[in-house]
Length: 225
Figure 1 (cartoon, rainbow, N blue to C red):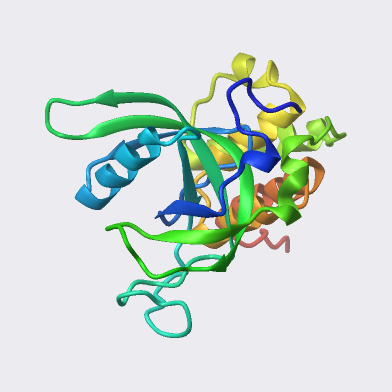
Figure 2 (tube, rainbow, N blue to C red):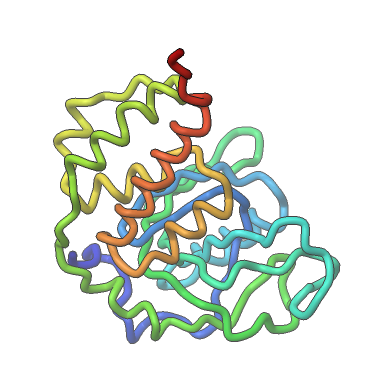
């Protein structure tokens, strides 16, 4: 899969990256994520990102309920070890002081360190090299029948009435990205999907999570006398 025509090359990725810690929200390379920005420090982060040539923001999950240990800055929780950088591809202002933006996932990143803060928002020194493949991942085989077979009872359990025609028209890559980003999984499950090595592995994790969710609400099997 080739990057978008306006996406940076691997060599253009910045050393320092502003990050938006948000639990339970997943951005994947080549995925699209709409965001409603209203907190003052993140309004400033978006203004700074828009003023830069690459317009990048790092989406990352905070570690749940951690308030101590190495890496805590100003009493805020530690960050997960991997996030995903997104480029601002659309931007609108609202009359009540919010920004409505959409990010397109560019590449994942690790964290070398979190430097002293010189802006209201957090930033990290990003480690990009393990995720160079995000720029050139080729279409991979997934067991599409298993994905679809897991989706139907999962959506029924969640009370979701999807556009099946639209879903069936997605490419394998787009199907996995879309379902992984939209499905209402827990934060740790979202992180596992993000850290999957490739589309094939992500599809297998996605199937497993959906099947476990359905089994968890099915109750014990009936006993025949």
